Length: 502
Ligand code: HEM
Image (cartoon, rainbow, N blue to C red):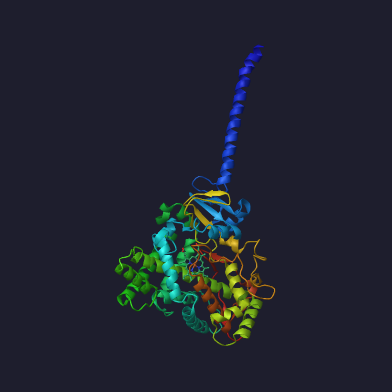
């Protein structure tokens, strides 16, 4: 009895403790259940480091693609203190960027992106300023013939200069990187400044080199660390180099703009810079609010277009030539189709619809090369519930283009270079939903029309004139398709022969 009396309070307190634990458990499990309902899942982050220790920063896109197989198409990772929601797979990326275009339509305002344009220009700006600059740029690019005859003439003219440069090597192996970049940047220069640069000009090589280096360094691990811990910037060599390159290009572009301003005549529009100045003047005269037409927006928009339009197109073109040398049977079919449909005459954009195999090869090059693997990070413009998950306004969003262009549920042979991905049974070209190298939605690449024209005309002009082969003594198998990782993926340094005797 005594013992029972002694044990009763003990039992009561044990029961109390158990009830307490049960209550905590129920509270915790209902909280985690709610949490799972609300926040996209993801690997558990460490304080400060986040998930940096679990990611291969050298191959961030591949690392995130692997994680998507474990956590699903919408998941969270922490890059240091920065929360990033990753969107993976064709269906999810399209659903977010197209069906929820507004909510997923802001650009991330990361420290690096801020350094790039200080909130001005097109690529790294938001709000009314971005809207006005994007609208103005699209109209002006169209006025200067994006996707039309005028740019076709400019590109064809540039093709001839490029062919001349290739011919100078007389079939011997050479690295085509620089010359292809100059050709691509001359197309943008013609639109921006109304002039092309001679390949021996001093300014063009410096601008191209600065942009190439910036794009390469932007994808480096130390810059990812800078974005997570911006106070470290001045101690990081890569960041200091990027800042130096940006300043140099800003100086070059400001000088080119000032020279154009000296001879500006509002009645004659020679280029993008003139169109901007004319718009500024007309808004001032009509007393309308031309708040966005200031020098910073002009300089940074031109810088954005020059950088976005040079590296991407030239990179893709280099991949296409490397792939032709690597797969000679595919090159045979390209050249057979070209000589059957076009022969020796001048190629025009009109020819594209009669060249389905070539169209498929160019599309497959863009898919396989996947040159902007993590797209350009976005940010949510407001709170959004997406696929049952709650994503707060201002969250960084990474549309993983690798997971779209290599989506196993969309492509028959995602890891193989296979032009038949874009050809039906009758050999006719057809577009695929998962072909998103230019991304999608309201921030999608605004140079797509121009880029597609450049890729078609440069590629066909070169293949009409040359046969691309590895250096003598090297077999096709030895050509390495591993990319150099930067903000964009480019081929490893290599040499090819451009031969006219085969
Ligand atoms: C093969 C060539 C190209 C590829 C693969 C490419 C790809 C991309 C991608 C993936 C984006 C990010 C879009 C997003 O956030 O959803 C982008 C944005 C952009 N691209 Fe391109 N691009 C190419 C050529 C060009 C050219 C030739 C120009 C210039 C005329 C250009 C100008 C831009 C601009 C200004 C943006 C930012 C758009 C904005 O934020 O509103 N691109 N591009």
